[in-house]
Length: 355
Image (cartoon, rainbow, N blue to C red):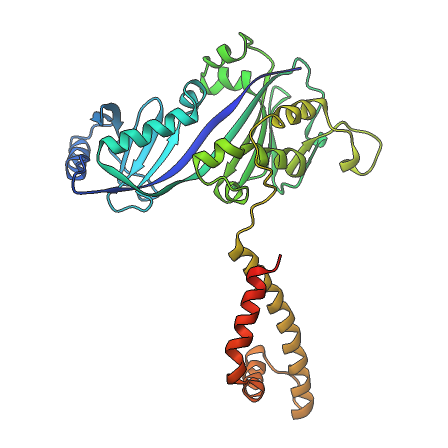
């Protein structure tokens, strides 16, 4: 067992760029060129030069509403004059492994600046895929060896042999799969052999696909955040989301010993940049949680008020709306306009300053 390579395999990012008066990006000309491609029924993308770089211009926009799509070996860029965010970029696997995310991000910003585009706010990461490639001559685990909090899981087989284990969907997805087979049967990314010290067989990938909300929970909003602390989210994922274990007789699977593959993965992740962020708390989300707890308490009081009013009026039942109508006059009786402002301010200070 040996870790051959690790790195980012996919990054998607939104850029908030403004086309000022000196912008060299001619949206009208792009629109005309795209319409010409459609009318001439050209099925293939056309070569386009922008900002000193060559791209293929797609004849179609995206389902998400971007009118223009350009791409080259390094990235796919979706953009529009009136879209917000105005640019959405997906960096390719090849470029990330060969050139690095930092270089690609900085080059994109330089390219945008050369076209006269100005950043209105920092970029926002939307998706990051982290890949770890291991040489595994023997596979001594199956789906039951994984202890996970994911509600969805699946596996794919070929000729009776498992090739892929998948756990989770949407925000967090873990895939453990035979990357050697995937290259030969699907992607054709033979250049990975250079990263694998010429290994071509028995290479398995552990790949975490992480989307926007989970990235935000760990403070990973921009590329600089990513470079400074992506180890935090990975430590959480391998310990709390899904772990690989060695089966024992213990009925409690969470007490099974950690598999050597996961131990090796954890040791490597502990060397990655981290800020010690376990979960970043959004203050607004914390306040929403307090409001929800208060609503639960209020619902209980409303039920008790409904029961009292039913007994008083000799009726079988009151709805929630009818009960609130009876509560409002009671609130008017106890409300003190003179003390309201001061009491509200005091509670605001307590919420703002309390730990």
